[in-house]
Amino acid sequence: MAMTKKILVCTNFRANLNNPSCAARDSQLVLAALKKELTKKNIVIEIEESPCMGYCNVGPNLRLAPNGEFFHGVSTINIAKLIQAAKKFSLS
Ligand code: FES
Image (tube, rainbow, N blue to C red; front, side):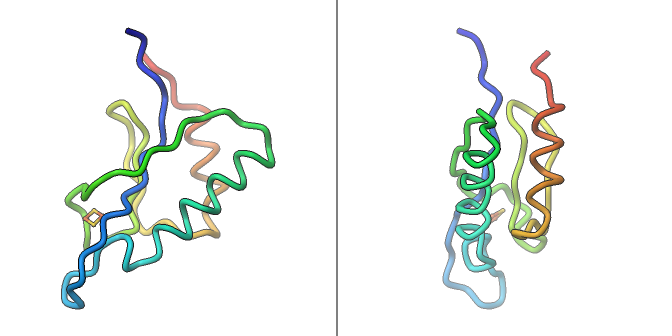
């Protein structure tokens, strides 16, 4: 089966103020902004919500899949950079 290029968005929520999860750092806002921007620009890249990626202390975390680059500390203002990277990312 052919692999599909995806952007994984960690939306894990953990109620622990000492170790904030990506959802506690507003990854849902990043997810919504990302979907909106892709739709607006007519770019077809699949987005998938992900469980914890193990980098909670530098979240919100996103990753290009399969096996692509991680993006840490993503906010709604650096979505454009992420989309550029996702467009360039090729399945090999
Ligand atoms: S909660 Fe997102 S990387 Fe751990």
